Image (cartoon, rainbow, N blue to C red; front, side, top):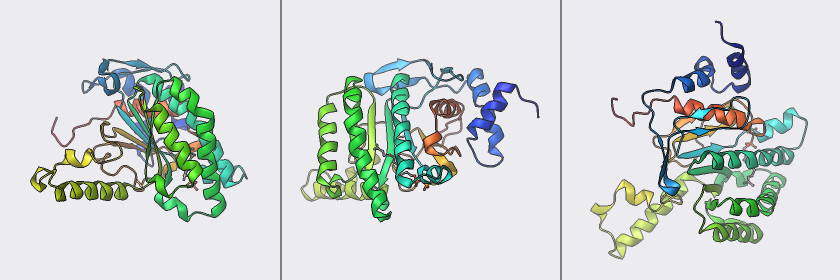
Length: 298
Ligand code: FPP
């Protein structure tokens, strides 16, 4: 099959999907150029403006995005395998993965995407070796120490998804401080999931709603999907439109279970530390080519 040089290069580097779907992925850029009739222009919730198209200025695949997701969620998988393949320690892999975050966050902000959710530490990650857990906890401190001024200056609002009460005091204080400091910001909603589990989040919402019912503040028959959404950590934010999990694993791993009900999924094989802004652009272009029907026949 003949493909223009630029596209075969994309295919090699992107390797976005498993098996036969790789060919579909080679057409990300082509599809983007054809700009489908199904385009729904981005409604940028964060400032009530509608943005018709955004231009990525980063990377040689820079292009216009006719339709961008409102909310992107990323499972940053593959730090361990990246470290092993470079004969480095697992903590070094996580550190390298954190380096990636700056650019991905900055790019998400520049594109005007409303919300970005990152899975940094799950409720299950406590069972990893002690040194690895400690390294991840240290990375949390380092990340906020180096990024908070810039994020705040960029009007980014930080929200921690997860139960902070089980975290060491230093980490807890740092996270609360970041949330408090940026609470009034109106730009990108940056959600960082730490000690987070999707089922736990839903169970917590159920407990809160049950308490309201016991107190007579809500009647059981009034409980709707919206009621549950309003009791999640992400209350007030749009549902996830695009979920990206790097490293080729194709699982949700308890991340944003409720919010991902109609998300489009992409599973690039690239390990997280190698997931560049250019590959991110490719994923965003691929999202624009998805025909989202939300159960309807359109
Ligand atoms: C999964 O890779 C990754 C994690 C469990 C941690 C992700 C965390 C970061 C990128 C940095 C921390 C973030 C902040 C905001 C400070 P893995 O270790 O499971 O990879 P493997 O499957 O190849 O072993």
